[in-house]
Length: 118
Image (tube, rainbow, N blue to C red; front, side, top):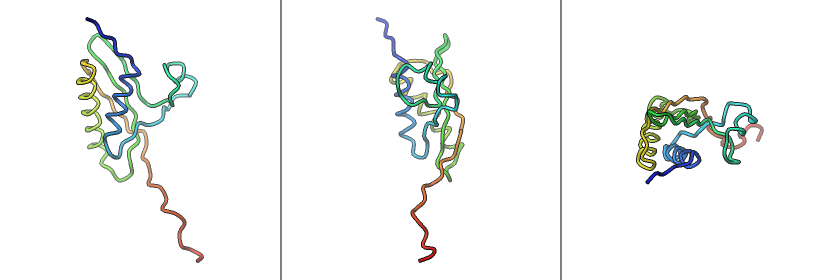
């Protein structure tokens, strides 16, 4: 029996794996929107996420935004491990590589107007 798993399903698995890690978010796609939407199989917002299937296994390229003050190396390593483990367990595929690039730092939201001038 042969089972084909769509790239949208694999993208959902990667997204869920990243969402489980506090302080990390998949970055918006850095490419021009028109190019990303041509490659996309759905109407979702483009993300910095690329899945490539080869004869040696699945390769994932992932762009992340990390919350300010977090340890970048720790979060990148945990993200790589989580994505590889989830894809292997849920899809039964060989994960060749999970390449992570930190594309940005998310600054904390302002806590409201300052008390100056009161």
